[in-house]
Length: 336
Image (cartoon, rainbow, N blue to C red; front, side):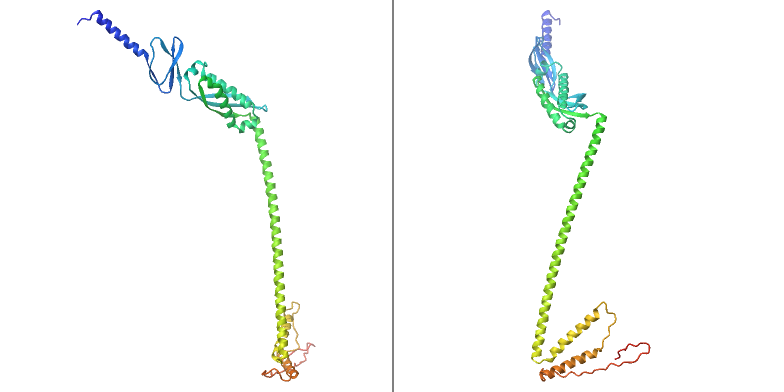
């Protein structure tokens, strides 16, 4: 089958139409935005997916990454407020929000952000003392974030985080800080030790005071109890004496016998329990005590004329002590 010139022309036209359509279809990957320029002027931004442009008139201007990105801040030397030189580095996280501003408002976005961050690190850290610089890192990060984010907002960029990674003072300064810290800790330890000793002395004095108070209260209570016991003993003695007196008045000879015998036995007990007495010499034997009591009973009967009722006369047997000469000792010896 022979092809005519018309058929060839139609085929070429269809092929060109397909090429033109393919040139106008743009596929944008996720996480990226492309700017479209027409005769060198920005007109719009292509978002992820399929997009159509006018072939040979519109063209892709720039391909901008819209994901959050990380930018390392190199190490630099910083002079603090108290003239101490330290080296510091950091890291910055940012995200492009507007691709057209990031492309057309600044040339070299990453370089601009890096220099902006480094200059602000020197400004912020240079306004602080070395002690503040080492102890207030969160405050440094927050101040840097506010300043850099405000400065980068016209570029369509959101600075999400700035972190200072390392702050390195010189070695001689580190050694001096170590000595200062050791001295400060020794001072605090001495203060705490003195405070503990002071508190211990106070507690010991309080304990001694309480012990003395309790001892005094115990002695007071013991004296009160002893006085009460003596008072009751005196009352009992008076009552016993009164009862004996009443019995004597009634002519009861047994009561006076009991009273005299009790006193006699108590006297003998006190003599025997004395510590300075080792040998007891008595002029009477144990039966003499009974004889004495019997004699007292007879005297009572004679005195009261036989009153005392049914008390039977007490038979007594008195044993006369016999003195036996001792050729070796001139002192008499009592025999039973």
